[in-house]
Length: 602
Image 1 (spheres, rainbow, N blue to C red):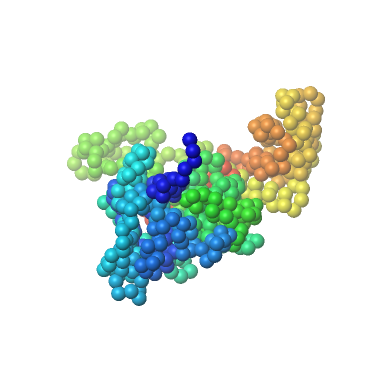
Image 2 (cartoon, helix red, strand yellow; image 1 turned 135 degrees about the vertical axis):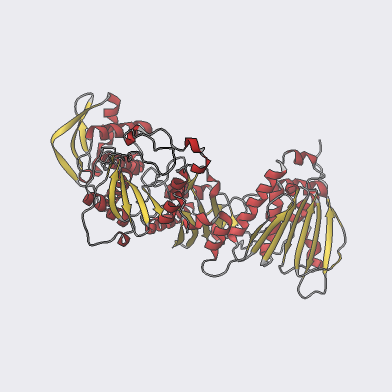
């Protein structure tokens, strides 16, 4: 078959297949054009999931007749000052969007500049252009797209339901709104619930807009990022480690105002939260990266959703550093949603719903088996109910020694009791706090390990008699190979025959750990990692296992002084709001939350 030149209409439809994947792609291209035009208000209206109608109205600079005609031509753009692609400072620059949309839909564009008496309107019906005609309108541009993919039925077969396509449009507009807090966005239509995100100005504009789009909870449970490193500026909000989701859909990345998907940034988030988040949970983040346009290539994907950094290592390091500094500054803070989960876990019985004859249920043996009160007239005269003995091992209440301090002086309060030999009950000015002593101490030991590692080898303590641990031959071999690395962590061991190792020294900060359990746990870890060649990259994992064995164990009774000392150290230690596995170390219940449990209202 001989080579032939394809007709213009077919060329446009092929280009549309690259640029216009679905209705959300159309919205993205048109809204980006509106943002580049300097708009302060953008209204988006859809119907039928964007297939029946997409209408974008803005108050930007508008176009004259010459620009309006050129706007629907292929590769025509006002956003490149010269012919170079190494200094892109706008969102749209290819000049393909309107031509591509017009080849697969009915496209109408009306535009007016401030200095013009009236506007002009031009239509493109499946690639056929009309002449501009006068149009009465305010300054700005109105673009209407109807019957999307009407002349390409095969494309429509691959679209999802109207509801799903409308949801994709909503997600796209959310991303654009997050990156442009100074612009008001109105999203409406017959296929959705209306949304209106007002323009935000001033120092807190970004936080306010992110709260509008992602919800107030995110703003309350996120730390502010503000770091400049190697010419890279990282801003935005990063959720606390205890504020997570079951998937990565709530992770948003923006580079020079453009929403992107990038493996470098995803990897940076994973590394930044490696110490704090459980393996199957994902932190909520909105990261904004400002970089010299010459250092990033945004022209590697037809829809500009992906990019390439000239120095990905510097970008990764800047993001990790920004999140690390912000989480460190947050100290022991934990997400407020943890307390909300606790409150919702309580089920307050509806006593009014119980029939009068059933209100006095059979007494529980825990309460001494007292007979039920009389159901006759007057008040009950039965013997008083005996409350449970709280001094039993499963629930222990200690009266704290008198101190000059008041609970309000400490963020985590003053210890009031220990329950179930694992949970510290504390009180500050207006809150009740429940602290998991093992999880909290585990984080404290872990942070001490890291601090000692940063300043040199971890201090060790000699065992009076070496502890011999019997293990399979392959585990002994792995531990023997890893011994030089373990010595830097304060653990000195050596081979002791064919199936045992002898532990001579242990890290001093672990106190008196379960040495046999620690060694077996490390052996399991080495077997899981398969190779000791990259053991240096696993130091944090090894430290985590050691910290677990050197922490205050569940089931250990603590004196009041020990409980208060633990609380004070948590307040002084960064990241102490969550253990090394990503679980919260404490829950704070406000007085109002407790009153709500009992139906008390003011």
